[in-house]
Image 1: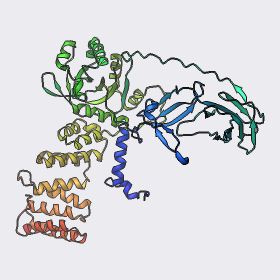
Image 2: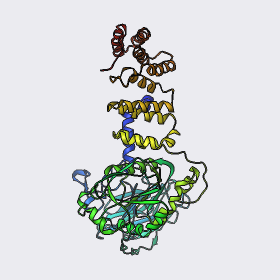
Image 3: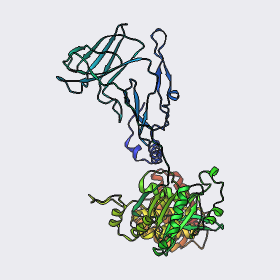
Length: 574
């Protein structure tokens, strides 16, 4: 039985609810709809035996089975030919579809438009009954709104089958009064005015729709330009030169870099590269290094028939090019998602303008004019408020300034993908930006230290722990981790008993000597420094706390240390 989630489930990141919500958010960020882009369905009423109602799926036969994220249909006789046409509203592109009904005109029909005089003018809430001479009765009620994001026509359309004869058209208005209308014949459109008693014939001539326009595809004249309103340090962007050398983009200290993703099969890409080539001297004067990187074969292997290196050589461009890596593309897509929300695959061409510190200045999706890049190069040196203004596609005045986005998420993403080296490089290069995040930067350095320790790189891990403490000297987890390694690491060149005592003592003071695991570390630190008496005293107190809290595993570990301290031996991890 479904129930509302408990408050604890909402805040617990490991709960099934929290994980499900995170997965749902991820799908939406990738452009998926909650409907899953299911094909649209249309059902045909085929009747049945003994009054049984049956429906057949006619979606494909009618040409309505679009695989859209559809929301609602709107019915209307758009061309006034006596049958209903269809508008479909979608959440994403195409946001509107028009389906014209071109079926053969074999059946009779009648279209009625109500106009109230004593009741509401639109006739909303009124009911229309049509009686045929064969005893059949059809009823419709005029409604205001029939679906999410849709409204069908206020003309009530009746399909009447083959060769029927009308007996009566009767309207029960929304005030409850009934009225019959005369002068109504088949295959026409009538307005029924309250109190008149006779239908007013409206023109029923078929409306000729314009022919479908012929689309001529050409090179795009504009791109989607997104200027970063926050200082967003990017990870190194790995690529290989056409000679096979591994390099990283975005770390040049002498100017800006325009990373351009292109493909041999992409016509707009080639036009863009040619435009860049013509403005090469202007790029050089502005201190911009253009770096064209081929993405051939990364996403569509079937389109990678040409050799990008040979193809690029024939272009005779004045820029050193190379091959983009899948990791480079992933990092750019992640950065775009952090800045703008949706995580969608980048198109080609895509370009990213980076400043000399590897911070993202702008991303261009589609072919971009060189003049736009040259203009945006000036954004790199602007103060934060001016960057906010430059990031807008129109002029205006802020009601309040937006908060800077979290730049740490890209470094955390690297850690999630076990890319410790790149996370370390980014944390070092972006130190000034990251330090503004306070304790969060210290947590990142701690995670890096933990990862390095797992890799057996203890000295680098300890350096990362010490850097974390420079950001937050009250972080007891870091104090404890650092002190334990200094006290019990199997490598004697790592251990330092006096420094271990200093860090562990501080952690114990911050926790008021009430944390058994920290006291266990402090005992090991005393033992490494040669003070076995205090080691035994501290370990005994730690064991009592662990037992009082029911932590049997910790109590057993402390007992192992106690036996060593009483024997005058330090605790060394195996």
